Amino acid sequence: MATIHQGRARPAQASGLELSSEPAAHSVNDEVVNDGGDAPPQSAYALQLQRGFPRLRFDDQALELNYRRVHLDNNRAHISRNLLLGIGFVVGFSALTHLVLPAAVNRLLDLIRLTVLGPVFINALVLVHTRLYQRWYPIICPYGAGVFGVGVVVLAVIAATQGVSLIASVVLATIYNYFMLGLAFRPALNASLLVLVSYPVVATLAGIPAPQRLVDIGVLLFTNVIGAIVCYSLERANRTNFLESQLLMETARRDGLTGIANRRTLDEHVDRVWSQAAREGRPLTLLLIDIDHFKAYNDRFGHQAGDECLRRVAWSLTGSARRPLDIAARYGGEEFALVLYDAGRQHAEKAARQIQAGIEALAIAHQASPATHKCLTVSIGIACIHPMSDRSHYGFIQLADEALYAAKERGRNCIVIMDKEYGGLTTGSFRKESAVAADVTH
Image (cartoon, rainbow, N blue to C red; front, side):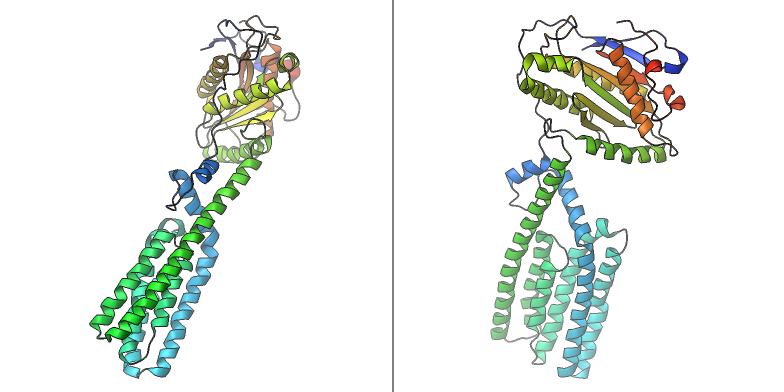
């Protein structure tokens, strides 16, 4: 691992800590070392598309949870409308039974509607329009769908004892459970099978003739087969669309050459975590990493070798940005950026050590370098501050840029951390003189 030594004291106007690193000597030939290195982490969306999901479940738990969250969010308005449609469905059949059944029977049916079906729809509507939706709707709704279906079965059987066939209402309830409630395939299937099983039980207890039971069961069985096939296909299509759309978005947010986040993604991320860190009072760290003498490398080995070098360096950096709010990105050209959330000075120094050790471990020959060890190195400028709500993140980026400038001016292959300088920083006014005021010992 590269060793890091603290430089001499710096003047007050540029009091950032300076660290330098000299990697151990390597025996390298005058050729590009390309053993493949570490590959960038493959997209979880692409991997899942390749593997498929015949069981309608993603292998990665985080991916599965994200799909469910997105699916529920996208269908929230539709579910709300469909619940109102279900209430209309119940009211409509109630009106029909009042036309054809005796008053005493209708009173019993209305009681079941008010005490069983009504609460199911009311509770579902409450869940859809509250914060409890994401957490509890997928858990409670399958049970509600089953209760709703069984309730409709009871209504249909009571009507059948009076010579009125309402098996169509059970068919509609089955279709409703499969397609109208936003349920995943398995919960929808379970709720609908409960309806299918309950019908022969209730019909037998009510004394419905066997021929009528047989025909009705056949109708419900075919309804479930068709509903299950279509519901399964629909969820597969939804999951495929989710993976493809997320992969497309991910591709747009990645740098085409290196595969890590691009500049636009970095800017959006910094803007977001800046506000969050200011609210939560957390420190924020930005590392700007520049490959030393990269133009000379390109001139010596060619642009294809230069591109491969950029890829390997980028892939190495991703190991230092593994937490949810951290990000590694290509800043531009041969410069990269690393944003670390809730990371103080000590964390920043440790990350910089790891980065230089990772680059050293790549052992990329650089015979065109003016340095004595003839191996690819990087200079790192670090801004480590506590964001303030009354200031923008542009000064944060400028401070890291000044630290990187200082690192390159002091001989390259070193690390400069600035934090106290932020208090006297005028955003947009790059302090070249102050940034290089102190000299360095290696």
